[in-house]
Length: 150
Image (cartoon, rainbow, N blue to C red; front, side):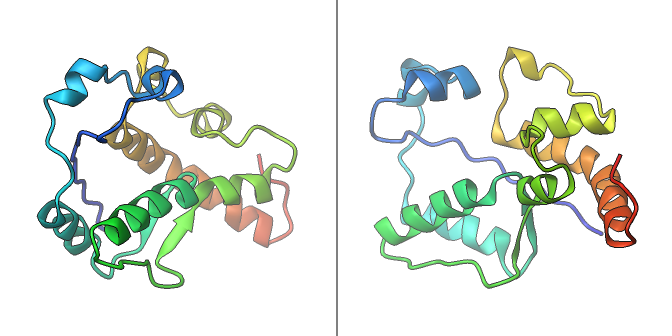
């Protein structure tokens, strides 16, 4: 299995919400120094994704964002069916009624969350999720074989 990372921070072209600031910690001043998302940048993202399987926590948000930005730029990108795996959905299947956040998953699996309480970004989220994947796969296999997920 191969993991690859791609980091791109762009100016959203609109004010950031207080809720978003609480999550990513990027101030209006910091975002103002970033370039707006261009067609060339979006093309790089789409090429990076290619035909790979994208594994993310709450993929409707992430894939939806990429898709809507590509559509805005006239690119019409849409992930292929089966190209995206939503680990949040798997958590809801394995632990119904329990919190489905990435932090809850890491805590449930005993994975060190690092300094996420100080804020986090998409790449840090992806790295944390990568550390959670072995335990999540193990719990999914137990579930498939009729054993309770831990």
